[in-house]
Image (cartoon, rainbow, N blue to C red; front, side, top):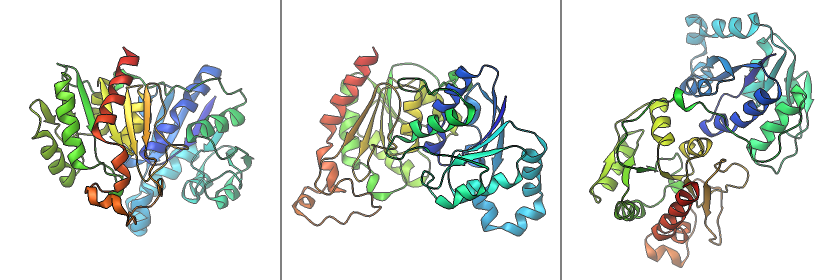
Length: 345
């Protein structure tokens, strides 16, 4: 059976699709999956052994420069890639207008979520076959149910497995056991306070672990250097691609992460991880895997799900921003991480 999966972004959403692919591969031996994904994430689907071919798109870039995209031939190349190959099923697992639009050019029956289930109801207008998947479930379980309904097998019981092939990740230089701090995120108020990261680095060094800190832009690089400066044996990693970062995560003794795509990748690799949630809620889209601890704030206004903190109360006097993180102090985070690491053994 040949299947085309459309799940273009973001990093977390892509990773959330892996357990469904594993289910399908287990239920339908010999299935091959081609995957349409944003060009910046094209290496990620290749980490799953059931993924045969990755078809990159550049929707954001094409929308910004449509004439250039047409003249370059990229758009035409994409249409040929998905239109020339016949598929037994084409599944839009994104449920957005931008992903559903891509199904106009495919060669095969198109499936997706119905209007009540999709993130954008208009997406269902593009599908030949619509599937109802109840909301109020974790994103991973929804994708698992979608693929099972389309391909005709029962959803496996229990927690799904991402099924990633670690041998496809770049091997880091190994030495002393290390913990990894994934401190970068897109929302300003999802950042855990820098002072907390520094204290946690000192604590984990006292526990005998090396601390490694990745970064993705200049601001994160400067913060990483400041965190590492307070703890001898804490190292700032060089800038690297997703394959290399995946390798570092795969071999970590433990990971602490804010609400970011690397938390999802660490969870998919079943690395003991503590994910920190202040203004956001892990309930429907938190890190999914074994040995995972979601620490969420019980602050009165959390989770607010807002990009900017509007709190004006007394907790501001503590100097912790956003103040909902006052409940997720370094001692609590360190204890949780050590417990998850001990559970894996």
